[in-house]
Amino acid sequence: MQRIVREQARKYAFDWEDEPLLRVEPGETFEIETYDASTGYFKTPADKAIPGKRPGFDKSPPLANPIGGPVWVAGAQKGDVLVVEIEHVQVEPYSWCAIGPRRGPLGESTRWPELSSDYTTKIFRHTPGLSGTTRDGTLHFSDKIFWPITPFVGTLGVAPEREVTTSLDGQGEWGGNLDIRDAAPGNRIYLPIFHEGARFYLGDVHASQGDTEFTGTAAETQSTVRLKLGVIKQKRIPWMRIEKPDALIAISANRPLEVAVEAATFHLMDWLITEHKFTPTDAYCLVSTCPDFRINVYQMCKIGKLSFVAGAEIPKRHVIA
Image (tube, rainbow, N blue to C red; front, side, top):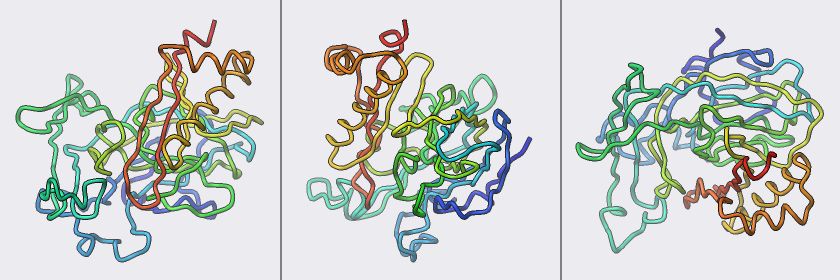
């Protein structure tokens, strides 16, 4: 099986001129070993998020959020759609969350000065599940608080059409740093393709994350991702889409949040109209009346140029007769 090993997965931009690290056939299974968002810097609580001590933070923008790629997909052309199927994600034995001064919405807090006066790194232990691996393991927030590991890929996408975009704050219809918890095993992710070969990148895996990723970091971890890529020929979609076994989700990112929510809903309506034979009137009314229609706010952290990420979700039982 072909693999991008961790030391190769140290790109910090989606760049259409990068030489492919792998060339795969549609449907071919391969693996990418990923670094965490700090490129391995955070290992213990003593490793603080002090910019002057972090490798790569002397650059602008900082060298954070490494990705592996590009992966060249045979037969993929501009104007096609890339289908990403994540088979499984195996995370490493720990994850971390880092907070501190001028980071996130409480980085200048006077109400809780411990959040803004010093840097804090929390390390979370992972234990294996019944499979003997972390694929079905447990994340230990503390001695008394724990939950199942629910891994997903935080940053993935294809090379954008015209520009080189960083993996730290790049976002668009092509993908990027979106931290969508539904970019997970068992779901299909659809991306518009802008260059021959698609030029796909992936990194920034999380062991778990709460809605909005409020601090700006979740349970950041290293991992091995097994996946395969497919191509739908001569098809255009306006933005990333995700198909779960039981639901459809249309994605958008923007600021303020209500713009992202509105655009994601428009994209979902477009999906219903163009592919599921809804009239515009029925699609419009469905998202306003169906009690199972949901808006997911995946990422809403106040860091740098990051936009807020929303997903408009509808169960398939209301869509597919």
